[in-house]
Image 1: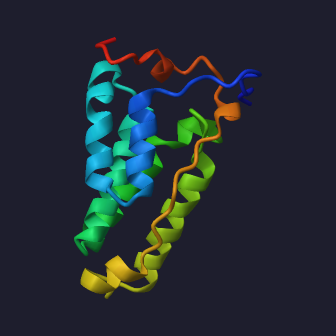
Image 2 (image 1 turned 90 degrees about the horizontal axis):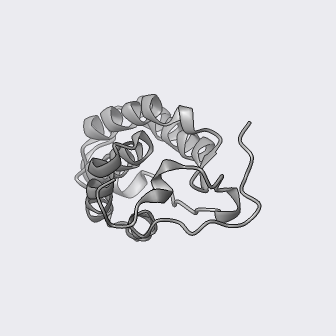
Length: 145
């Protein structure tokens, strides 16, 4: 069981920018924001978020196969960070991924404009009080780690 930090820890700026862009539906841009920090520290968590965002890039393009493949990768990459990591409800994120995969399974014809319109686009809402404080990603200060 992970214990939350008693004092909220400031979250890394690239991570906050990722969330802002993701929640605005700018999935490609959100993905790009985390690339440099991910390359710097090879965070599997950041890589999972990048893959998650890319699933919705595929959704915006009406590509169910791309959505499916990316969400399956997310289901492999993010479970070690459950239940919360950097204040993100990883369990809820994984539940959303499963729900979308079931939706695609139940309606194989879902693609193109129908996919773009019917797919739920989840939001990410970090809870700073649930940040442990010892996550390696917190060391990011715009420099190579």
